[in-house]
Length: 394
Ligand SMILES: Cc1cc2nc3c(=O)[nH]c(=O)nc-3n(C[C@H](O)[C@H](O)[C@H](O)COP(=O)(O)OP(=O)(O)OC[C@H]3O[C@@H](n4cnc5c(N)ncnc54)[C@H](O)[C@@H]3O)c2cc1C
Image (cartoon, rainbow, N blue to C red):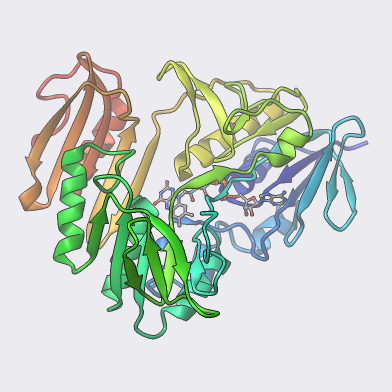
């Protein structure tokens, strides 16, 4: 009898895993269950060209809709898995259906971190993770708005850039002293703060939202200081939490992410996991890490598919990521946390430069602003001893 691989989550990692299984010659049944209404789609444009209206929804699809049937992938959309029965070797869907598996791959991604504060459930307060979220946001942005964005991370700033381009009033509330605080050097935070200020975004640092106020609809954000900021739309962009509940309830090891080994296998050898929902060991960084990036979702899915096909390989990538704000492209290679020193090459005033992060003598990460060559070279040079000619001149 033919084997079955069930994939839970029809996102970037799930779709890649299904594709890689077929490419690698997997002959069993592949069933992919996704709780969203759409076929697998790319999320990065959601806060960029899809929000601005430059992309139609069909341009988001990761594969043409006929791809799945043509490749023997049984894609079930609108199908939420509510439990894993490891003893019975099946997943249980929220409508009660049971689907048996020989191998299971969890690719459940993350969800936006919620702010459990008064008024954050009012109409006009939105998160941004799904196509449905952006459709709701776009509908509200069809008329001029005063938008408050809670959180000065990538998603908050990308939305700020698009919203300003569309002529909305935008204020970003950041509880820390600078934007992109967790991920980039202060110098780069300053660059981005100046960029947004020059486009008319109001940035407020060291402030926290205490509540959203309004009579049946957002009218203002109240800060912990008591200050009231009038607005009619609030975007909550304060990070994401991994969807680990299914794994945890099934007794799999979980630690801010589903714990997997270098082949993407969980603590149950019949169950793999890939993408934003996982935490994996990185020899390169000497610790376990959880990444939220397209690169990681694709590469981990390939590694998991490879292991399912019996070809184990060690997944220990140079992570990379990008962010588009206005006409500025930021490309990040490596992880800069734990750096000891930075070196800037090029002139921020000229709009094209990069910052190299070193630990000891070694290159740990590079943030490139409108400087694609340094990004590509950095991905190949990661971990090498720093010298002036390791990366291109400014
Ligand atoms: C607005 C936005 C902008 C981004 N921009 C960038 C960028 O510029 N560059 C970059 O590298 N990355 C970016 N990312 C991150 C990138 O999109 C993610 O890292 C990537 O989508 C992760 O893929 P995944 O398959 O792990 O998760 P997802 O793509 O989130 O897919 C997981 C899927 O599983 C579904 N699911 C969860 N639980 C269940 C269940 N129980 N049953 C059925 N289905 C379930 C979810 O609804 C979802 O559809 C962005 C993300 C967002 C939201």
